[in-house]
Image (cartoon, rainbow, N blue to C red):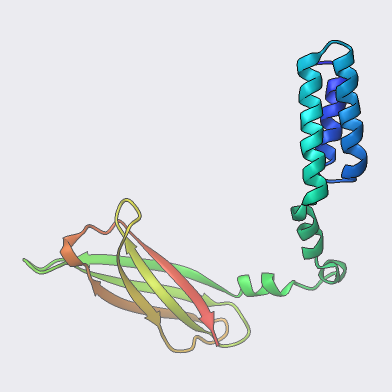
Length: 183
């Protein structure tokens, strides 16, 4: 590839993001120059690429860059030593363990007993709620049980337990907790 073709492609791609009214015509012009120098395939490719990228850059400016720029919270970035609220909420509790056990009794459907241990790392009491989803080896939901319980004090560990009947005797491969914290 000649340097004209590369420069035309770069101008066309840059037209997607920055100044499409400037970079697209420059890319098209470089493609036309490549055409006149006998590089027909390269010249046509650059003209089409620069034209399409310029059209898209003008009609629908790179919205993802605008969204990225507008989503940056400069107040949070400029305050040293403070945690962002979202980061604080994400780290104020954790699942310590989840144990499950299948018991079968004769012809009856098996029963899956479970025990969930969570830790409240926040400075305030928390109420945990959600569900435990039991899945087969393919990740398909076999059964589900709810997690509801009393408040767990700050810095304390909460233990939740329950059991659920597994219909049709389907084999449970894993238990997946889906837990959230409410007031």
